[in-house]
Each structure stands twice: as C-alpha cells, then as structure tokens.
Image (cartoon, rainbow, N blue to C red; front, side, top):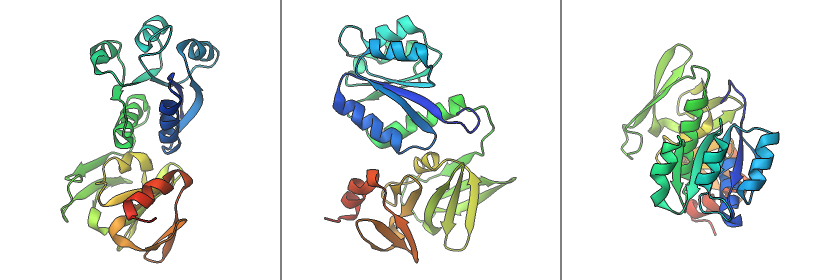
Length: 243
C-alpha cells in the first residue's frame, strides 16, 4: 500500500460467479478498494485508461481477448494477480511479472496470501514486522513475535482471546494484557491456525476455544460481545455448527 492508503483494484472475468467470489474476498480485507468489476478485457481497458488502478485480478480464458493477450498489450504499471481455472498458463503469467497465479476454485486463505504479497511489494514504509514461529500447528507452545514500539514482544497463541482492527492498528486481547501494533488484521489472519481462530467480522478475529456463548448476531468471549459480520455469517455457522 502507498503509505496508509488503500490499494485500488479491478476485477476482469467473464464469469459472474467468479467475479462475485473475488468481490466478497476483497470486501473482507482492509486497505483494498474495489473500483470496478468488468466482464471483458475491452471494458476494463477503457476504464483503466481513464482511471488507473493499483491492482488487477485478471482471468485468462475470456472471449475476444485473453488475459495473457490483454496484459501483453497493456504493459501495465499495475500489479496483476491471475485468477483462472487453467494451470498451463502459469509460466506465461510469471514471465509477464504477475504477482501471483490463483487456480479456481480459489480459497480465501490462498487469496489472502496473494494480497499479503501485494502489500509487501507496494509498501513504501517500514511496517512493523510480524514473525511467526510454528503458528500453523495446534501445539500449545505456538507463538508470535510482534513488534510493539521498539521491542519484539512474544505472544503465545493460547493466550489470545480476540484480535480487533482499529484503523491502521490491531489490538490483541490476551488473558493478561492488551497489545497495540501497527498492522492490518488481514495480515495477521494469514498466520493463525484456522482450527483455533476464526474471522467473524471485518474488524474481529476470535479464538474459538474461548467462546462462552454465541447467537446468529454476536459471540461472547470473556464478557466481551463481538458482532458477527454479514459477510462472515455463513462461515461462522459452518465452523461453530449453528443451524
């Protein structure tokens, strides 16, 4: 991202369902701003020439002109992530310096890794670094080193109740303290084990083990009521077994 600004993006895909999935994923990530969703390359070309964007989600197999052909002709300064059902074009995509190559059906966790890559490539600031150690396992000794002010603080995953996004910062509530760090909630989400943590709102990630009670609209963790976002309700119901 440019400083603390949003990354503007555009979707180019001839499949309505594919566009809707990417739209949903974008809506769940801080600092991503969807400018337009286009069904063909020509429509996108006319838009981009009038209003440049930072990032393009580009399908390959489209009528009239393919995503590969479009990118060769455009030679954009924008970052490009290919979203396609065909693996055989990966070499061509990376020769065109694409940031990533996502195969459909695209899982959100894989999408998130691509976005984190874009954030790293486009960042003009020395953002506080989050270092993970064994976080993908479910062992009780998994932890993060989180840079807070001028020190790296060790945070055990087993101690985290929930994580809240506060504009450009995150607040991590643990069993004995609150930690504030300059970091996006989406970037820390990619480091957490999905069996232990669940994104329930654009601004909240909760530790599943500390849920005291829940309803279709909110979750109670240690006396704190955390809302369930509209875009997250289906996933929350599935993970928590609420029907």
